[in-house]
Structures are given as structure tokens and as C-alpha cells.
Image (tube, rainbow, N blue to C red; front, side, top):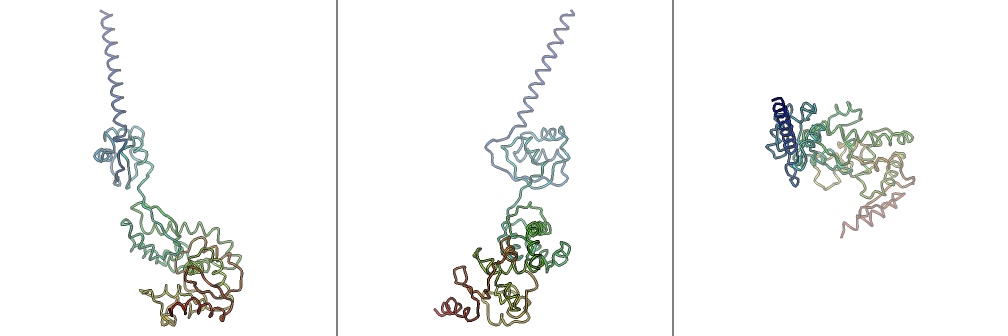
Length: 337
């Protein structure tokens, strides 16, 4: 009798162990990828959503095999409360554990925005709006805020000049304020290497960035930046007006692309460097690293003028007579044809 009881007990234990092994294997299989060849899916984790709902939504989206098992996995590892809200791009080729790790790390979906050197705040706003994700109009309001400029320790006006051109990636819910701040942070990182050189030349931040913005707009030839910076520094040192078309254009509301004599004679335009002395009130675009460096490490020369060859490069002159001949050759005769 005792032998029979012992045998029955052993069989029961063996049966339970076998069932446990089968359950473990089945559970593990239900944590494997849904589709190793599947395409990524955009998935939203709402703020404050419980892990049970997240698991259910993942299962409905075809990203995990078993939503309840996903929730159990999160709880088992103590991660249920650490899943971060946001928009994700998740693949059904990932296991439930891998998806859980992505949600806990907060690897939300980001959108790339390329800001070229020389873009104005208005152009950056247009590019943000074109993504269909970010609010360009609100960004422009932020970029023109003197209050925010003061808060960020910038000389203003607004953030123009300090929205550093670069390639950025931001999540969908990034606010215009956060976008602007991150661009200024990038500028600050670059300025740290420029500032000592500026101090040696007796130039402050506003002077360097304003001059760099003009240099950025005046030439599309990178190798000319130090030479053009040298021209403007020479003119300032001699008390000459800068007489820069791009600065004047910046101060014209709704500019139609045709710079007229009336524009050059307009004394009400604070950016009209044909009429004002010295630098305009602030930067006219957002310069890149090389334009900034050109101002603090300009080419040393005695040029005072330059005129476009109409191929992206310029002819440089030391005297007005020499400059007039270059203008006649490259501009007046060309316009007469």
C-alpha cells in the first residue's frame, strides 16, 4: 500500500513538473516576435496609461502575441511603472522583452529637421511647419521673443543669429520653446570655442554673430568667408558704412526680390547699412561655425570692396576706383546685355 501511494505521488509530481515545463515553453513562445519579417508600426503610449492597457494595445497593433503576458513580464521585472509615454516606431520582428526595453528607455519616434547655414528664423519656422509635426508659427513667435533672449543670456533682439544651423531630431511632442532652447544650446557649445578668439579681438557676442551672419549671406563660397570678414572689419575700423545688400533686405518687410534705389536710401530701415553707421541692430540670419570663425580669424588684407562675379565668387578691390571698374565689368555690362 505504501508503495502504491509513493508511486502515485511520484507520478503526480512528475506530471505537474511536465505541465510546468510545457506551460513555461508555451509562455516563452508567446513572448517571441510576432513576425520576424514584419514592418515597423507607429505606436502611441498615452501619458499615465496602465501597463495592462499598454499590453492590450500592443497586442491589438500586432506587436506582441499576448498583451497580458507582456504586462506580466513588465511587472515581473519591476518595470510596469517605468514605461515612458510618447510616440514610438516599433517592429513586430522584436520580442516582447525587446519592445519593453524600448518603452522603458523612452526611445520615442523622432523627426529630422535640417537647418542650413544662413537660414533666418522665419525660414526655420517654415521648415518646421513643413514637417507637419511642429508648430512653425509658434516657433517664430518664440524666436522673436526678447524676453526669452534675456532669459537665455543672449544680447538679442530675439534669438535670430543664435539658432545654430545643424541637423536635429525631435519627438513629436517637443514644444517650440524646447526646440528653440536646444538650438541655442548647440550655439553655446560652438561659441565656447569662438569666445576666447573674439575676446582677443575685442569683439563681443553680438558683434561676432552679427558680422558672421552678414558674411554668411554675402557669399556662397566657403573659402571667401575669411576674406569677406576682413573687408567688413577693415571698413568698420575706418569708420566706413558696411553697405551690405543682405542687411538692407533683411529690414524690408515683404521683400519682393528686387532691391531698389529707394530701399538703399530708406533711413527708416534700421538694417539699411547704406545709411546707418556701424553694425545693424542684430544678426540677419543664423550663421554656422565657419562664418563665426571667419570673423575672429579673418584674412589680413587691405581690401575695402567686393563685387560678385555672378558665379558665387567675388572680385575684391582696395580702392573705390578699382571697385568701380570691377562693378562695370561684372554688373553694369551684364545688366546692359
